[in-house]
Image 1 (spheres, rainbow, N blue to C red):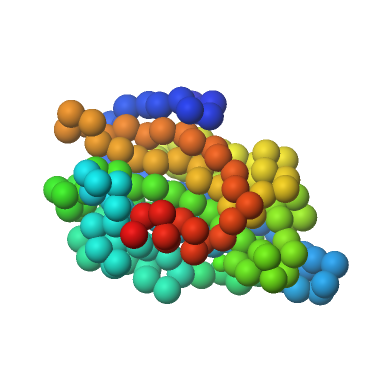
Image 2: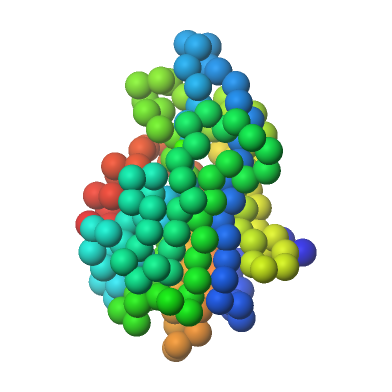
Length: 181
Ligand SMILES: [Ca+2]
Ligand SMILES: [Ca+2]
């Protein structure tokens, strides 16, 4: 297994990846479930979304080129292993795309007064066909945060690379949407 440190970059020589987000069911003090969400932003040269449909998340499960597919929203973390997955196939990606950014957020974190430190056994990982190439334990690494920009795929000189970013924020999905629109 390659274990990436924050900021570390690796060339990727496979076309297919999966992003897996997992967490255990539990309820906050207020008796509300934790609903974590994995999302992807497909960006062009200008670091903005190629189009609205290139924001792939629980309400838009597939990019127009079919390169990024979200397998569906999980509202509670019920189930083993990856509770939400995003599948990437670089063979299908639009030639205009130069970057795919991946984030994890907690749905309504503000309203529900939640952060990653309260979510049991939460993780985000990136796997290629054969192995896990990166994994963050969200509960430990981002205890007071409500969102994490955990990595990006980007194209440089025709070669796709993966960068582990690992930046936590106290903000929601809307702030990422604003940033990339
Ligand atoms: Ca969810
Ligand atoms: Ca689970």
